[in-house]
Amino acid sequence: MIVNRSERSLGDLFGDLSSETSNLVRQEVALAKTELMEKATQVGRDVGLLAAGGLVAYAGFLAVLAAVIIALAIVMPWWLAALLVGLVVIGVGYFLVQKGLDGLKHEDLAPRQTLDTLKENLEWAKQQTR
Image 1 (cartoon, rainbow, N blue to C red):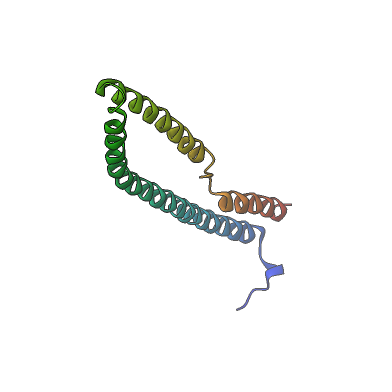
Image 2 (cartoon, rainbow, N blue to C red):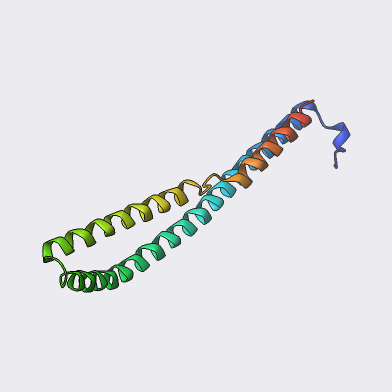
C-alpha cells in the first residue's frame, strides 16, 4: 500500500527529518574534509617548491658571496670584507623571512564553502520545523 505524504504521521515526518539531517551532517563533514585536504595539498606543494628553490639558490648564492668577499679583500682586510658581506646577507635574509611570513598569514585555510552550506542548512532546518 502506498501512503500519501499528506497522510503520514507526525512521528514519521520527524523520523524522516532526523534521518535527512543525519545524512546532511555526514555529507557536510565529508565536504569539509575534502576542502581542507585540497587546501593543505596546495599549501604543501607551495612550501615544497619554496624549499627546493631556496636550496638551489642557496648554493649559487654562496658562490657569489665568496666572489664578493674575495673582490672586497683587494681593498680591505679579509675579515672586514667577510663581516660586511655577512651583515648585508643577514639584512636581506631577514627581509625575505618577514615577507614569507606575511604571505602565509594571508592564506585563508578555513573551509569557506562548508561554512556557507552549513549556514544554509541551518536556515533550511529552521524552516522545516516551523
